[in-house]
Amino acid sequence: MNLAFVESPVQLLNVLEWAHTRPYAPEAVTVVVLSPTDPLSRGQLRRMAELARDEGFTVRWQEARGGPTAPLRTVRELAPMLRSADRIVVGDPFSRYVQLLLTLAGDQELTVVDDGTATMEFAAQLARGERLVRWHRRGTGGARERLLAPVSLLARRRLAPRPGREVEVFTAMPLGTAPEGITVTPNLFGWTRARFGPPTLLAGADLVGTSLVETGVVDDARYAEAVRRLARAQGARRYFAHRRESPGKLQRLSRLTGLEIVRPELPLELVARRGPVAATVLSFPSTVVHTLPLALAGTAVEVAVCDIAPEWLTEGVSPRAEGFLAAVTGTARGVQRLPAPA
Image (cartoon, rainbow, N blue to C red; front, side):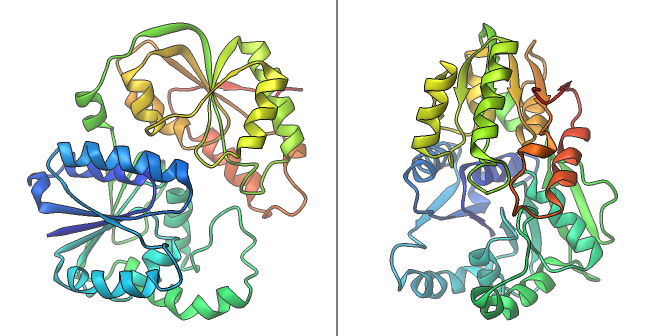
């Protein structure tokens, strides 16, 4: 049995893409959804779970954060499945929940499927032997970090390759030189392209939203002004909101820019492939500048990425943020580069 743990709609999509490249039937994969608490993520995950079940996968919805006793109950219920699995598939190696579950695993084969740009940092940190810290965090730690340090250390050992044990990274992101012992399998979005589209094309441009404000990387006011200028310069009509963007921020963007705010019900790769979609899709540095060209391969849609200006970054952001965002943009293939709006 292959046992997959996902916490976001994109992770579940990439489990379906990974399984599409394997020789066995979907019935050989059990997907456990470690449900988040925010309604938008839950809604997208519910719809992705329906798609997965339609494809023949077994999907278990786990209320992993439903109250103070939920983590203990979740670990107790999932422990037997973890121990009997032949392969464990995880969508977010930085997740403390996933790291806790990995401490219960044995020497099963392991696959890490894409969780966006975080996959790039995961591979780099694994190669350097560093502890796992998300790129936009300073990593100075606190009481909670110190408490979970032993769990993170053990999970990192579980995630590292060793003789006789395969670790696979299934990704659409550029990883450069893979760490020794890591097998990199390219995610070409074959399932998405086979299942949906091609889309009907609309005039003008669509703009893809980002959660860089919510994660504390980019200043709110600077971001709003950049969206206004980019939308005006490129003739954008719709703004596809990231599921983590706050309602208040989106209301301000709508008033400032006149853009139609769209809350996608599925990951953007599926929404764009199903259509209708504008002939030009604009984005700031994010996962979609790598995934959309693959999902939309064979169509006439052009993807363009707009750089982040250094002065947009917040004062307390990690020193690595500017270089990491530049790398996300600079390594994107098949996209048009746009300068940051002045």
